[in-house]
Length: 220
Image 1: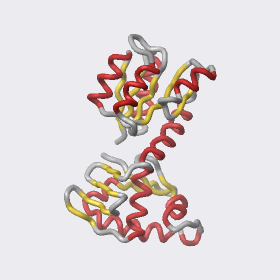
Image 2 (image 1 turned 180 degrees about the horizontal axis):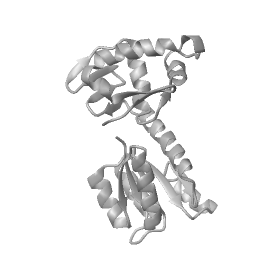
Image 3 (image 1 turned 90 degrees about the vertical axis):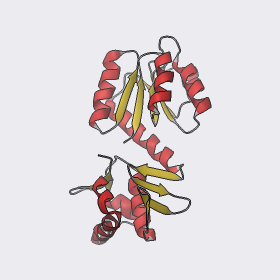
């Protein structure tokens, strides 16, 4: 489960984000000022920070600079009423994305999912609860036991893990794994998914079928 730290002193906005993100399966925590943001970053270890700029004690620019100096890989999306060009330029020195208020929650989801995909693709290591994938070595472990997958099975699992908590269509899997999409061949995805689930054993419970759409891997 991805962890999202919401840094926002407007309680109506922070509560809305918390409810909507929790409903989508994200683990969330709220910080209301600059000092809390630093503390919760250290304790909570979020994957992404949704960061307001105008905050008590420390502003978002300072927070982003401090955290980025410690953690080059963390995702930061700035949410702010400051839409002027100079503020965008300053924010994007440290943040991955910049969204101006007022915003629609669907935009938050879309930007967040895109950022998580980029972050995961840049890593050599992916994990979903007890499933650990080492991309550089092409090895998969369930807990401490290595699972030997074919190249196709490995690539299907990689596609799901890169898009953790996001439903991936059969067409998307075919495109990523086989490089083409043909309606009459979509059942090949089901065949290989059955092979993959058998090899994962107990850990296959994390792969859910979304009827009529595709598959999603998520922690329970």
